[in-house]
Image (cartoon, rainbow, N blue to C red; front, side, top):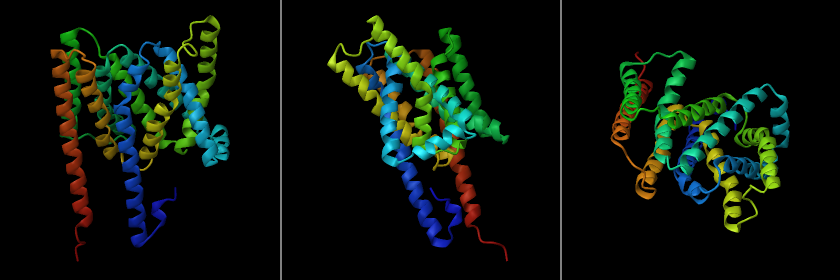
Length: 316
């Protein structure tokens, strides 16, 4: 994608606006698809989470290979595998595998609410990590939002006697994945191909072993086979959209969009799957939603102040 900064005048504005609309479309699409993910996991919940993860990797690799072939990205793939970003892509592949595995475990064990809590935490985790990495100071409202999040988790631990580890791992793994994909200079298709390529040998080895032992589920039921094969498209589509959006949209806007998927998952967990919404969870969610409200208002206010400064006339 050409650098908008190399254009001048009205052409720069038009191109930037077009890129923004493209990024917004992909951002909304990614989180809507992720929000509906529990519906897919429900189809395969009778299968072991580890086996589902192995199938996700294998079928995702097939889908991404078709994308690489269709977009003629083989030269970019070779450059990425030989370049300085190789270590970063290996790290991002591990992070996305952890995120997939934990989410599958949560969805198959009726813990969608805790997984949704992780994605509610994600925007604040992303913001906090950005502050740490770039050493920017937090203002009072931002510090209050982070305090409310910590308080919400502490209240839940005190009332239920256990750490919401699924939510924390979901948030931290995807937060770090998003940061890596933001800084790695590789396009969405090439990056996803490399990530699944690194995970493929272990996944195929595990699937082959399970089939050899007779414990693998593939080939025993056409419905389950189709659902597992569908995991490639179900996995790649939102992830591809997310990576495209992350390279175009500012992190603050990505934070707002990220509220879509946990809200959908939260509603599915309560309304469709009938999960218990305990008092500890209610207080924890209430504090985190309050923190998100403060964070969103403060971010919007900062953007408005900055826009007014940019539009202000120069002093004569």
